[in-house]
Image: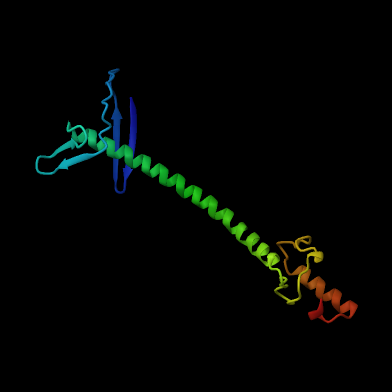
Length: 152
């Protein structure tokens, strides 16, 4: 016995399948275009003009909604993964755009001095736990060497 559960907003539909070993021959029409007649409370396939049971129509719609939900969930997951990649790509693109300018060099956001390729952009790393430590070290070193802080 197989049980499927369909959740459609506030509704929860549980379907128990038990065909007792019977096999049904497949209809050549997939019955994808249905007409629901509210007056006669009937369901008719607009392609083959066969009358279908309301139960069959309900099950077909619930399977379709389930497939649609699975596809939307997969697309949302892929979008989140793409979004996570985009954050790192934005920073990379910004750096590339700065270096590709023919007549301009990128500047340090703190001292506004030009950053040249020979300065080794990206060669030095700073501890995430103490990002200001490198700046304190630079200021202390410049005081020892007698260099004004703005010229470091």
